[in-house]
Amino acid sequence: MLLYHQTVTCLTKVMILRAMFYEEDFEIEILLENTVIIYVWNIGKKQIWQAALEFETARIRVGYGFG
Image (cartoon, rainbow, N blue to C red; front, side):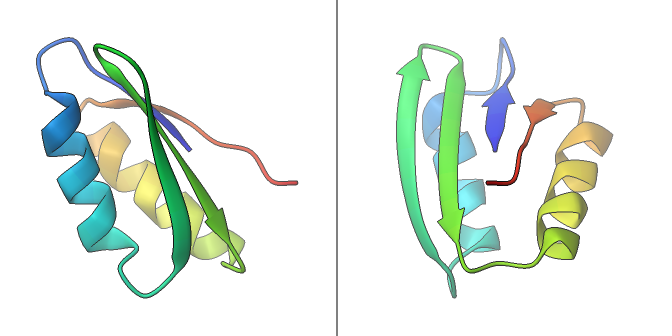
């Protein structure tokens, strides 16, 4: 899942992601000043879709994929 927002800091996005996926195996990477990516293993699609919906509702751009 990739998150982008111009005014929300990367630290804030990382803290939100850690709170959302604290029970899962994940890795977080800061790509650019305003962009964060999280890799999550062994998680259901519904959980990713729910997280994406929550970010979009907060007007944080989100992209995700499954592989």
